[in-house]
Image 1 (cartoon, one colour):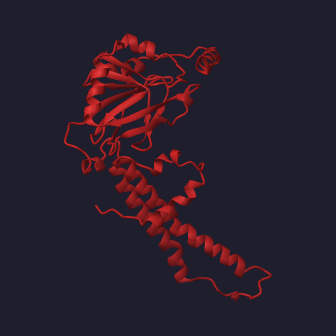
Image 2 (cartoon, rainbow, N blue to C red; image 1 turned 135 degrees about the horizontal axis):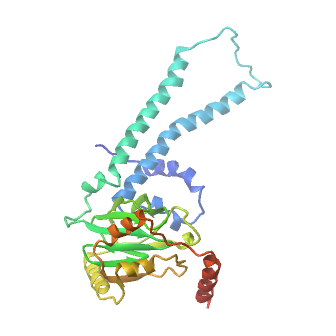
Length: 317
């Protein structure tokens, strides 16, 4: 499958309209600074779609301006007027042919792009030159109100509000929620995917560079939503092994009873991160089954006001 390469000037031209949607700080333009093949592919096809649409928008805009100037009532040069004109084969071809071609081109690239970043089978990761041959790392993601729990079932450890992954190695996610629908999004590494109660969705990523990247929920889910973000750390293999050893030695454990306490509504203003050892096998599946059987973690009526005041006082001192 061929890949279109954009000159720097064309890329800038295609992205210019989007820059007006945000502020002037480059640090928040995560979508335009991909650090993995998934996000790089999404950016590529976004630029391609914008460039194709500009082929319609720019000429149309120029023609509208030209028509307004040429055919206005007080124009200095009067345009020719033919009261008997009724049809033009050339205009029919332009009006119908060009849109059909453009829709066909957009449809083709949409089909190709969707398959490349399909969360359940991203083909772009199969052909990635930056990936090593190690077995993919499995991470189970559980969203609560309003925190993230990342379970590493193969390692029997877990991390709250901080995701640590080895760079250059594929990571496969299974995702679910305890209560309401959330949205898992790491703009520089992986696209948005919904996280739904009682259901399991999938996503994958591969970090081409070591570093720290911002992850967050992109779906409004209640009072603590604004603080429901997490750091994603892509580290080299030796650092990842050191982090695993640290997690396995943690005095905090994650049995299902511990998870029920963790899943209670919590406004994480301080962005507190924690690691757990001795994670109960099958925790992810058990959470899904419990949700299907009606397990809920209700937010007390007075919780928002009391929790906010306590958290703000604690972190303002």
